[in-house]
Length: 182
Image 1 (spheres, rainbow, N blue to C red):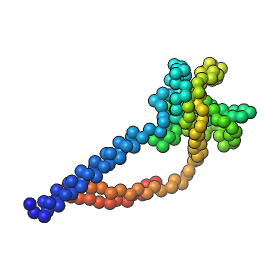
Image 2 (cartoon, helix red, strand yellow; image 1 turned 45 degrees about the vertical axis):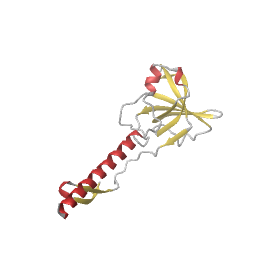
Image 3 (cartoon, one colour; image 1 turned 90 degrees about the horizontal axis):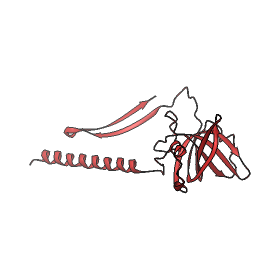
Image 4 (cartoon, rainbow, N blue to C red; image 1 turned 180 degrees about the vertical axis):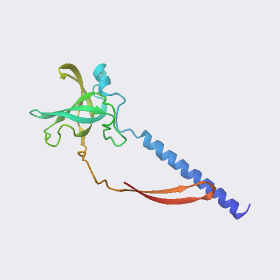
């Protein structure tokens, strides 16, 4: 075997190793669960399951209302699916409503209707209420972890995005690319 043939074999082995590492990294990311449940608030509302009490859940959505009580704050939230970072995907269909019960005081001007929030904590049970005059059984979480997402703004001048990539192609070709998008 000539030096060129050995180089080609080494490059192919290197490409396979890189591909294997990328697949392993992607599968690790895909299996990284942030505590989200496959059960939505709407599912728990329509089929109450008292055995779930204490189960750690992560839900998110948009705040509908804020009620400060003597020693706690209760947020009513319209639930949406979450992305991998745990942020709400408000462009998707709602997955029901739920209550986030947080010990202490939350500032209503910060936790105002329309703000995105992600809540993680144990399932407390149910609280009966009304939505537009109709009966609704709210599932409730003890909001031990609460992420208030930045307010969405209309940005007329979007910031450019810069991406850098490295690739290995067939026939021993490789390359580096830089892209700028608006």
